[in-house]
Image 1 (cartoon, chains in turn yellow, purple):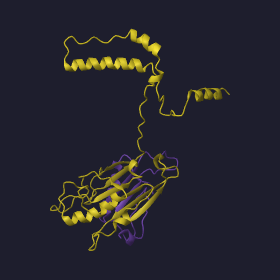
Image 2 (cartoon, chains in turn purple, red):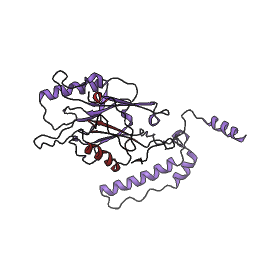
Image 3 (cartoon, one colour):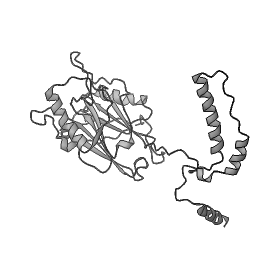
Length: 236
Length: 79
């Protein structure tokens, strides 16, 4: 088992965390419990910063390989490690059912032995787990885990109905005409007509209402008074 | 020695992504070299490569241009 700490003084992907620990393991079968060479508690422990655990675990478990029929022994051994991971908690990054080992012996089944786990601090930064590389001649497939900045979706701007310019809307509504209804309406044509009319009316109303969030950088504590004060400030 | 990949430098912009590759090399040099030459297929070369069962010669672990090796003593790596 080997760990490498990556330090980023400006924060990892604009997150508050400055460190990332990557631990890779190679579990070999043994004759004594837990029947693998490294105890699960040594691999999975609580860390307040991002931690990625990956490696050849030599374990079979239905969460990684749902279509494989397991022996009771295989299930008990692997569950010991998976439970240790989920208790912390760590999340399995593998796509279930994507094999990572294709044995040279054609009598043996492909399996999912190469696993990757991310702790809660790392999970938002995990973009993908994939096996995009060609065979290297090993019976294992290279696995690629990509970390990226989390995508933060800001809510779309919404109209501030309380500030709706009623005078202007009233004048415009007087001249508003709905499109002609289809002469022989079918369900589809009627639905289309309703959508067009509704969109035109909504657009008319929203064009006379200011947006609650004028831009993604707007602050909820900003006020008209601050706007006037900023204007005064910039005069100097 | 010329680097196989253009390394990230202090003047590089913020990493667009942080790819990490994991592979079991079965102690084979051929597998090791195939793995690193295969990185040209990736949109971004990996910043970290985690290898199980790396090849070795006279107790010296492998290196590849453009990458720095972080290895414990050889016996501990297999523990």
